[in-house]
Every structure is written in C-alpha cells, then in structure tokens.
Amino acid sequence: MKNYEPVKRVISFVFMLLAIAVLVAMFALVWYRYYALTIIYPFFRKGNWMVIAVYAFILYLGLYINEGNKIGFYTYGQTLFSQILGILVVNILMYVQISLIGRQFLWVWPMVSISLIQMAFMTIWTWIGDKVYHKIYPPRRMVLVSGRGRHVNALMAKITAREDKYQVKEWIDEDEGIEKILPRLKHYDAVIICDLNIKIRNEITKYCFENDIRIYVSPRISDVIMRGADEIHLFDSPLLLCRNYGLTFEQRLVKRMMDIVIAGIGLLITSPLYLVIAIAIKAYDKGPVLYKQKRLTRGGRVFEIYKFRSMIVDAEKNGARLAGKEDDRITPVGRILRRFRLDELPQLLNILKGDMAVVGPRPERPELAEIISQDIPEFSYRLKVKAGLTGFAQVVGKYNTSPYDKLEMDLMYISKYSIRLDLKIMMMTPKMLFIKDRTEGVDE
Image (cartoon, rainbow, N blue to C red; front, side, top):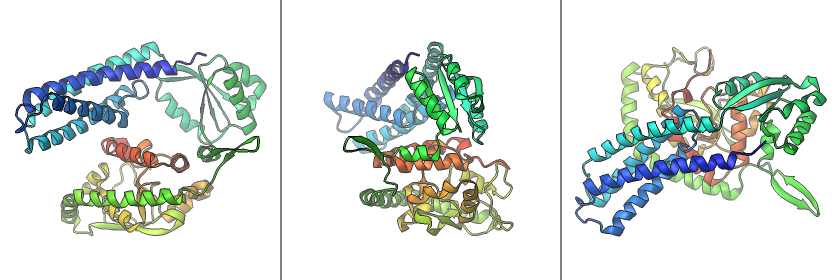
C-alpha cells in the first residue's frame, strides 16, 4: 500500500495558502482604501506592510487553531464553520488593532463588508477543495477485526457516519482465528482493530507493519497510559518508563500561576454578564441565582462547584441524574445559558480558590462517579490532576460522550500534558460554544 499522507498534507497546505493569500489581499485593499490614509498619523510603506503581515499571521493562526485547514478530514460543513469562525475572530481582533493605531473607533462597515465577502469566498473555495480532495482520494476500503466488547457497535456507528472518508467492507470476528484473519487483511487499505484479544492484536499489528497496511486502533486504558512513557535504556535494553504521578511540581506551579491570571482577567471581562444573567434567573422564578453542587477534584477531594442555576429549584428531589435532551427540569433561561455554557461562568471563582484549573477533566459528582466506577473501575484515574473548566474531552467530545471515551480522552491529556496543550485547548474552547451537539443532553 502506498503512503499518500505526505502528499495530502502538501495539497491541504497549498490549498490553504492560496486561500489565505486571497483573504489577505482582500484585507489589504480595505486597509489601503479605508484605513491607512484616515489614521491621524498614517504609516509609511513599512508600516503598511507590517499591518498586512500581522493580519496574515493571525489569520493563519486562527484557521489553524480552529482546524479550518483540515480539508477532507472533517465534513464540508464542519470545515467551513471552523473557517468562518476563524475569519470572524481574526477580523474583530484586527479592527480593534486598527482602531488602537488610529486612537479612535474607525468606520466599522469596511471590515463588516470584507468579512462577508471573505466568508462567501471560503464557502465556494472550500466546496471546491472538498470535491477535489475526495475525487483524488476516495474513501478508504477498510476491514474491522474485533472481539465481542461493548465498544464495537458504537465505534462502527461513528465510522459509518463518514462514508465519504471510510467504508467498512468486511467485519471479522476474532473467533475465526489468526490463520484465517491475516490473509484477508492485504485486500484492504486499512484495518480497524477493537476489543481484541491481546495475542491476536499483536499478530495483526506486526503483520500490518510488515505489509505497510494502515491500522486504526481503539485503545485500551493501558494503551493510553503508555502514551506518556519516557524512552530510557537500562544498559543496552530499551525500556518505557511510565512515571504515573500526574503533573510534576514545576508543571503544577506554572499551571496554577496561569489559572490565577486567566481566571482574574476572565472575571473582569465577564462581570457585566454576571449582572444580566442574575437578573434574568431571578425574574423567571425568583429562585436562587447560584447553584452549588458537590464535585470531585484532584486526589478525590470533594468541593462545592458554583454554577448559574439553569434548572427548576427542586430539580433533584428524586435523586441525581444527568440532564436529558428534552429535560423538562431546565428553565427557558437555563436553556440559553446551557446552549452557550454561560451557566459555568461562576466556576472562575472555583479556579481562584484553587479547587479547579482552567484546563483539566470536568469534575464529576461523587454519587455518579461511584456508579460509573462500578462499570469502569479505572474512572478514578482522571483524578490525578485538578478538575477543569474546559478540557480535552470537552473540545473533542460532547456532553453525551460515553464515560469510557471521556476517560480515555482525559488520560490522553494527563499522559501528554504540556503548557502548550493547555493553551491549545483554551483557544479551541470558544469554537465549541457555537456547536449545538457539544452541549446536547444524554438520551433518556
């Protein structure tokens, strides 16, 4: 099997580079026509080029962070949404910067107009890119080899939802035996392995490596833990060292300093929203504005989390349960708050108190954690770090993602922790506020 991955990356990069060149040219025309000559102290040639270069840089950064450069990886709609969000954020930032240069709020209509034109251009350009990509690279012909685990059907449902990219042509049960399985794998572009016996999985992995066949692996908890291992040598024997203590002292110190600064700035910026939300909640049913609930953080310590109340006053008189898709306990005000996750703003206070971090696994309720742990004993592993306001499982998964998948994503974050990863998750979080199914409740 040929490896087309480097070629794909080059094509995606060139496609996005051309798009950015056009978008920057559009901005340059607006800058020269409406802003450069109207600023009190107009720039000379080098200053104009500097403004355009800054725009090009933050535009590329905005599209990269929002994953708007992944043509073919996501659906056309998902990619376009990411690009439009990136363009809007970048243009707002540039308008603020231009106004600061001009020392006044300049005419906003040129930036609004160019944003609409840029979005129209990207709508057409991305559609063309998506069609060309799938014409050159048709869906992969895949075979699924699995055991009888509980995750297989859920994984198959997700794969078949992207028939434009993946096509599972055969499903092989591990009970057929390794002798019958291996010869059939070479007829496919890729192999998916899920919930396999460890011996069979090892044989398939080595066979695929030898024959240049791509493998998609549904990882076990132990696989995720191993991702954070250090490579060492004991004399002439290679070893993988899993330290298994979460974050180092230095990482915790830097992370805590970042939390204090970010939470402080966040409280300052969002303080007007607190007043508006409090009035809306109080006006609806005259109940309490804040809702306190016991949650778990690092080391299993219990703390009280703060949230704007989004449900009726006696929402849990019959016991704790997750919010459903059509939960009648959620108030009209609460639906708006939950839709944009504004109900979680008071957790900035929890961050300042030290109960939570800006980024980390979402804090679970003790009683629900106990129930989940009966089915998934490893669920407590996520408590090696502080609970977070946002996290890897939140920007990649959904509210109703299964506990097992959330656990694996949380462990991926812990095992590969870095300040850079924290910053990336923070920058990806605003995008999630505009995607409806990210806050969708669980099935009843």
